[in-house]
Image (cartoon, rainbow, N blue to C red; front, side, top):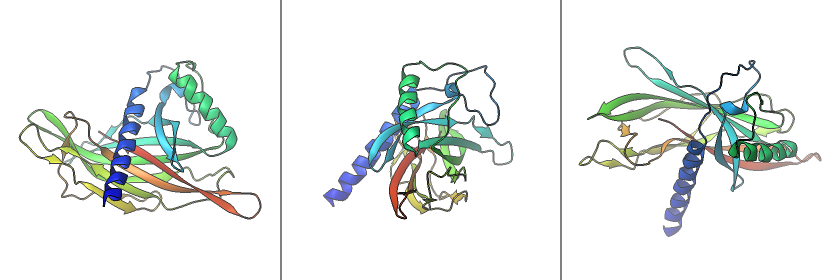
Amino acid sequence: MESRKLKKIILVSFLLVCILICNSIPIMASNEKSSDNEILVNQLQIATIQLDGKNISIPIRKHVPVKTFSSNPSTQEVADFFIPVSKEARDYNQKLIRDMKMRLTTTDQALDTAGYFTATSTINYTRDTYNSHPRIKMSSFSVNNEGDLDGYLVGLGSPQAEVFQLGYYGPAGHPEVMDQRKSYSLNWAKSATVPSSWLPVCTDIDSHLRGVQYNILLIYSNGDGTVREENCNFFHSCG
């Protein structure tokens, strides 16, 4: 029992670190134009993921949230996670992250995606307010991959996910919601539904987890007919 509690504490601590690091490097405004296939570095943020239990920093791109104006308006947030899978890409990634943290990148510098695997997460949610406090309620999510493994990966496992919608239902005097989490086994690019019974949570009171934690099995060839596997964990926060 104590071991299970410890594992939960470690997981929540890792997710909070991911959120803090991701938010510490804001998206920089840019007037530079890029082609459809070009990703400018100053459009990226830094996030922490885990590869086989080891924390590494990677670039991610958070798209501008898209709002739908219907009888039930919702917001869609999309994030691209650029995960280095080749040795060359990991060496390049290490230097890139260092340069991004030290603000040494140039305005026209593009991300070299060779040797990277791209996972794209999409989260849909609705917004409301409670006594002027903004709240969100997730409705669905999905994760997709770019489809081209570039020969660095020979396969991918089916994504596993855990959704968190934790926080305060309202300001002081209203319950703190800490049991809204659910595990999923997913198919790539297939949407999964968040329980409609979940309560919306405030986004401006305290720091709580809101988003999806993904676990993906990356499968590599050893070049001798055998394969090796790596577990990749990353968190997409929303709201």
